[in-house]
Length: 273
Image (cartoon, rainbow, N blue to C red; front, side):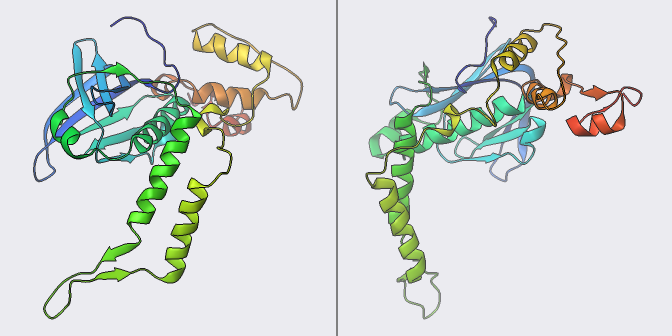
């Protein structure tokens, strides 16, 4: 593969284990790819798709329909993306935690902004798409469409089907008045004239870095050897934590000369390492 960079949260470099599951949920086939890229894109009917590229070829693109994301170990650079209709799951690891979080949030917002697949389009595209186009960076319109679609789903779910059994009528069970009021208020707030908020992914993660701190972070990302110092309270540990979160966990080892300093940055001592 050609050299690439992760931009705008639409691509992610990682180690990925691809597992195909059967009807019972057991893994029938597993493929481990230590140098892979996950890419978000769109297919021929403008639905969000996921493609996995690696030196030996590619998998997909897969249309993202019903899916589940497990991100309990996000801080360790690990997550699992399960595509339920295609019965395939991607076990992602060795990702910079900051980039992994941005990628997952971008995917969630893009899928929510697209909404549900409808009728003929859903039958036409199948499980695996035949076309892959680059997806646009996340913007305020995506955020607004995602909020509207979520509000519409709340309106459709104001009643819940009641379980049927012997002697039980099949009537929808109404939710409590307080629950319905809360859902309606949320939907009205989503569709109201309130000015749209700036997308979370367009905001800096945590406090913004100063110009000198950004320069240090860029140098480290480019593979340069860097020494930075400063007086007490100038943000040395803060910058170091940002650098650690931007690097692959499996090849990044924060160390310090004393135990107190190592605990402060979430690392270990040089002697223990």
